[in-house]
Image (cartoon, rainbow, N blue to C red; front, top):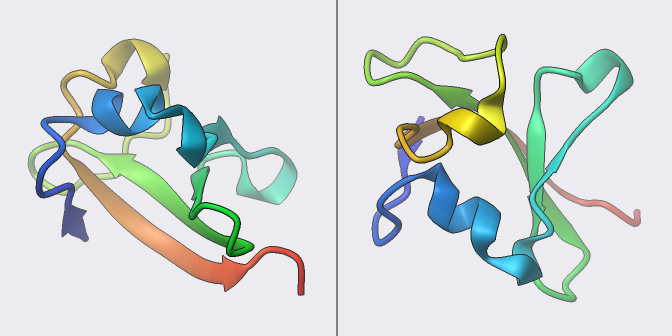
Length: 80
């Protein structure tokens, strides 16, 4: 799990337009992703509560301001 460091919450990440913060679908419906610029790399994550438990239910976007921890599930070149 990682702490966002300079970001105060997941809201800062979601509002940073170049990251293209998005909810995934299908088998990865509990995950969210950000893109790392034009590198082709994508980081997928699951938001967590302050105890490190995954948050997979409810309106994640509405909770973004309170979410400070995510579980990184993958870092990959999305286009390979």
